[in-house]
Image (cartoon, rainbow, N blue to C red; front, side):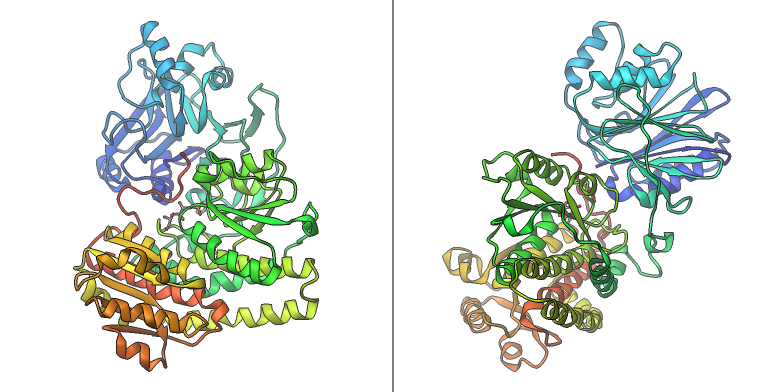
Length: 600
Ligand code: M6R
């Protein structure tokens, strides 16, 4: 939620801030703004709407500042408006702040500051930070920030610049992500790595409770007591090309097409990773998977694989529910925390609370160096590359790959399969990428299906067993990018309620590969037909029965039943994509959403 950036160096700051903000726009796009210091004065420019509105507003204004901060907002406190857009300043325009996260005690602080005579100009929680820094400033920006941080409650990151120390940016992290990018005679601050990829791949990930002080020639990190902290620099394995559209109309489409590679790279990465866990896997008698959204759906598929291959019972819980429920976990419980960003607050906080109860936490994460990556006892990585589209696609199939391989690893460590069997199964699994390539060839056909059904207002998605989570995922994709109401359901449950909804206005997407639940799926499909439902089915290309019974049939190549979710999900991603695109919607940045949700 919200993206923050900072630049200090020898180049003009404004174009760098704007281009970095564009790459962070997926984190929020209600309003955007920058603050720079030029000729000893603070200049603030803000605009409601996307970054392009801010870019337009800045046309012709040739700022020469070489230091600045920027922000793209996903509103929490205060409606999207110019006055609530960041950066926020103190009344005297001496300090400017950009902020991501929530200051939980801001009302109390605001009251205190107002009683001292300070006037506020926005409804945001952020503005208290600017006023507090101004209140505590006695000639040392770092010290003023440290005093301020001690007054704040919540999970947040912010960056501040001041006319009093015009060569310096101070960044704070506690709860929300913040990385420092190291350049030559220039340094950067950003909520996420893609923002700074065109400029540097040398990055320091700040930990909670750390403050970074950046000048063009130096980066110093301190803890909240002002004690210097030494940090490792890591080299980001992604290049800028992987964070750009590469000829595709949208990031989402590009990312859908990158899935075979994402899965292949994830398999390669898994096999070359040192998998010595810092805990004894043979003592694990239960796995609890915590995740949100699409990552939760991956966890549901993983449950079937882990229970079958490793024989360990798995419970999958929404991370937001886990934290405030009394789910029993102890030192014999393994918690799998799945999050592509590694920054989702619900998942992180649930993982931390499980850790406190003694459970071992294994993260499944795409962003190396993210908070969850550092907080987990061990991390299994998806190697999907940066995912920019708000709708998760390639990170989902990459998560599936990790979960399948983890199920084999657990099976091997528990003596259920030997080395040879492990590698045989991995080889078989690797073949799935060829099937994924084939399904992508259906994109144009699915665009025609989209044209036929885009006018409908409600969809039902049905699947059983491994494809029940895929029904949930198909429905989520449609909802989030095309704003069409959709429900995912286990097909067998339809007769217990949702069947009442079925009529000729309700397309029903039936996922029915020829597996052990195929016959049951056909019976459920018949139930839909006899209520005049319109069936769009996804099944094996040679399946004449399914084809005949469906109003629209999408034929996918035959695939091992166990691996079918990696293939069946692709037509559903494409269907959602083409519907949203044909409806003229903003596929990569759907309304009300943000790529990374760092608030609870
Ligand atoms: O970064 P995470 O995997 O933790 O994100 C979890 C969800 O916010 C995410 O999957 C969300 O549901 C996506 N927009 C789905 O496309």
